[in-house]
Length: 136
Image 1 (spheres, rainbow, N blue to C red):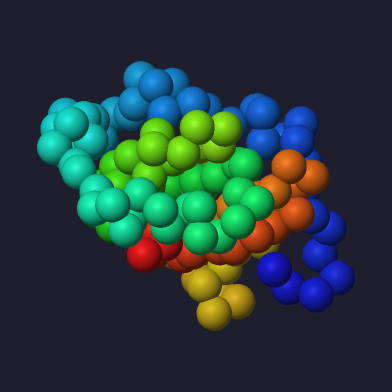
Image 2: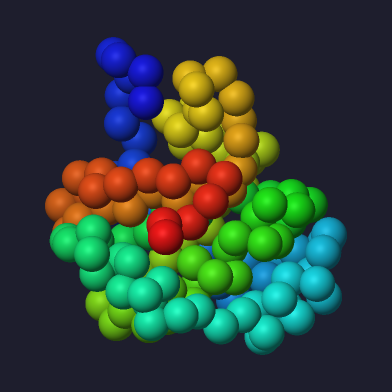
């Protein structure tokens, strides 16, 4: 996030995001490929614990678009990581429909690279962020 910017990721804003099922339902590009990748994705025990190692994570915000090949590769694994950690919510936001969110997570302060994974604690304090890849 650039200094002086207002943080727009509140609990209320997070709650407006799509669930995984809602994200899949609205997909028009790569839907079959995404569903197949999700079904075939397995994660290692170490990957399953990656979110636990980050401590207080309670929410994962994903900024993505269905046409993005990197998202197709990374989002299913993150979904499985969240699935393996009860008590963590994940919500999806489309990059192009949410420029105010996307502009807080520019790669190198310049590029609207996706996917973005922003992890928050119970008070919506950012714990970690990953741009173009999931935590490993």
